[in-house]
Length: 117
Image 1: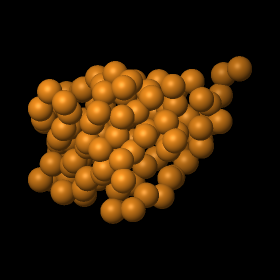
Image 2 (image 1 turned 45 degrees about the vertical axis):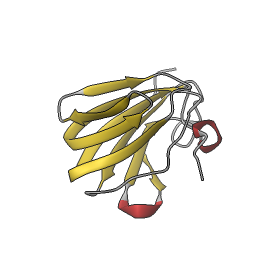
Image 3 (image 1 turned 135 degrees about the vertical axis):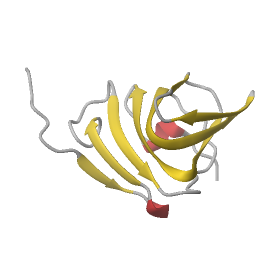
Image 4 (image 1 turned 60 degrees about the vertical axis):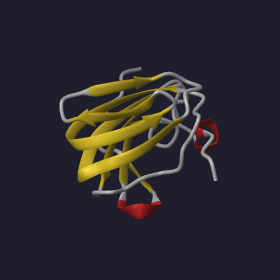
């Protein structure tokens, strides 16, 4: 059934990052996919993880630095990065912070992220 999502679910996280989930386990009880808008302050980072989901990171403003086994990739506004499941990654907001969308298949769940530490 078609369903209008008139507002995202705000998911609290430490470090000043804001997550607004439009589709996913919290907002729509969907485990197939999650779509969330992220806003991270300059220098924000999170522990390395080896998620059990594919992730597409689409940067709208600022930049996101993604450390991975092949090195480090800076994703600027207007660019996207595809990370397949099983790839060890660590995300950091660039010097101007970052506004981006994260699309996860299957939907993001803390236990599927497999964060270190």
